[in-house]
Each structure stands twice: as structure tokens, then as C-alpha cells.
Amino acid sequence: MRQERIVLIGNGMAGIRTIEEILKLETNRFHITVFGEEKHPNYNRILLSSVLQGDARVDDIVLNEYSWYEDNGIELFTGDAIAKIDTKKQVVYSSSGIERSYDHLLLATGSNPFMLPLPGVEKEGVIAFRNIGDCETMMEAAKTYKKAAVIGGGLLGLEAARGLLNLNMDVDVIHIADHLMDRQLDSDAGKMLKAELEQQGMRFHLNKQTVKINGRKRVTGLTFSDHSSLKADLVVMAVGIQPNVELAKRSGIKVDRAIVVNDCMETNVPNVYAVGECAEHRGIVYGLVAPLYEQGKILASRLCSTGKGELLHTKARSFTRN
Image 1: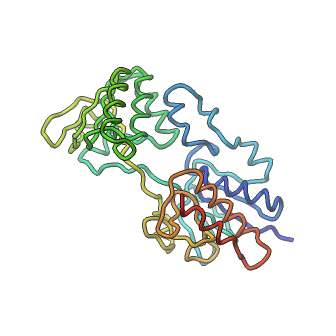
Image 2: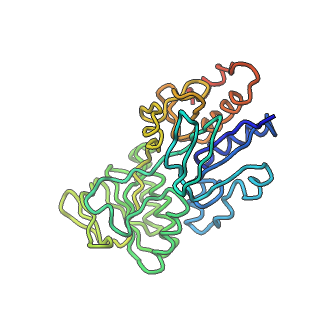
Image 3: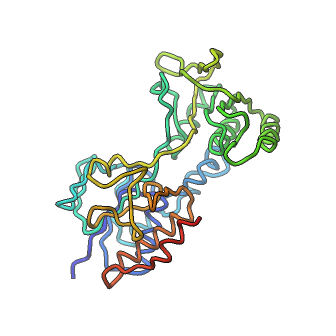
């Protein structure tokens, strides 16, 4: 009997957890192909700050080694993004020219870092903090450059700042609000956090709006709305993320804030599903691990069901209450 073909676009935590859940239910039913844009196997993105801060190596945060893919008969392509989906022929085409047909297509394209559309954002030395490549760029830059600026005083920005301090860089944090982590902390708690981090060596510029990134080829500093400026030869933007939905849009898959799915994680296109930070369920896009893993269980149940896909709708609704 021919194996059903699953193609997973996205080699991150949500997509691979879905595959793990499928393998628990059906070990030999599917032939699985995974395309990942990054050159690494599946890793724990939450622990990137540990790598940057020197508390862990890249190998330490890998969740599924290459051997896991081989042991489970999974065809893996790393460093090769999908450029086109033909939903009528049910074929995907990678950037390197690889083609794979599918019976079931899983989109787990995650999120992209939001880069402020500032003049000069394209300059060398202006990066986000989202993946292993970003960590490697910062660690390499620290060997040559010493003045770093982090735009964004939320948790991710402060984690980046802490890592840059550990790399022996001078670090300034720019935040548009009047206290740090303003979405999680009140003013008093934000002030206490600021005092603690200042003792560690960070400098803060609150109520500051960046309007320009200075420099010719490489960044040399920032200019703010009050006409003040700051020197920097590395700028890290940590101002939020946005669902990675461009491929879905180009492929005729319904997108609102993210890829719209129903209780079974189905999109509006037959045999195409979405999970993770790129998926929008009942108007909600999730960024926390627990509901994303729950989505993986639901989709695995849908794909492995022997009936007509009747699903535990009560379970599907459960992650909307988190």
C-alpha cells in the first residue's frame, strides 16, 4: 500500500512536534518530507538567549538531531526554503529546485522579527534576534566592534542586551515607553528592574523613539525624535514578531492576521493545514509553546483519523482559553 505523503514546510518547534505526534499514532502510514529555511535541525528557539549569553552551545539546544530524522525515515532539507506551492497539482518547489508532491501539506512557517521601517535599516550591522544565525552574527561582531544598541526594552531585548554584555560589548537599550517590560510590569517593578540591570552594566534610554539609523555602509549610530543621537556599530531590533504568511498569501491560502484555520487546523485549501505562530484560530494567533503543541496533537489526530476527520472539538477549543 502506498504511503501517504506529508510535506512539512518549517523545521521549527511546532511543526516537528506535530510530526512527533503523528509518529506516535501512525508509525509507517506516511512518507514525511521536511523543508527548513535554516541550516540547522529542529532546536529550542526559547533557549537562544542561553547560547548568546554563553551558557549553552548550539548543540545543547537542538531538540531533534539529524539521526532522529534518519531513524524515522524522514526526508530532511535544511537551508532550503519553499519558494512556490501549486495547490492544484499538490506540489511544492524549493529555492534550490527540489520538487515534492504531497497528499497533506503542513505549513509551520512561524514568525519573522518585526524590523522598524527606519531610514538605514538595511545597513550592515542592523539585525534582529530570532535565530541561531542572529546569535552567530552578534558573537562575530563582538570580536571587532564594542558599542551595541538594542531597540526594544521587552524581555527579548533585555535578553539580547544581557548576552551582548557577556560578549564584552558596551550596551545601550532604547525603549519607547517610560519603563522596561511595560506589557508585563507596572512602573514600580520596571524601575526596580532597570536599577538591577544598570548595576550589571546596561545603559537605558527611555521614552526614546528612534527615527534614523546612521552610517554609510555599516551602522554608526542612531538618531532619535528629540534630535539627540547615540553611537553604535551594532544595532539589534527586538520590537516584536509577525506571522510569516507571504508564501501562504502567494499560494491562495486565506490569511488574516495569520493563516486562518478551523478547529482541525485546516486552511481554506483542501489538504493544506497550518500550525504554530503562522496559524490563526478563531481570531487568535498564539506565541506560547503550550497551545502550539496542542495544535500539533489536534492536527495529528485529524490526519491519522480513520473516519471522516471527526475531531475532539472540545479539545480543539481548549487552547483558545489560554
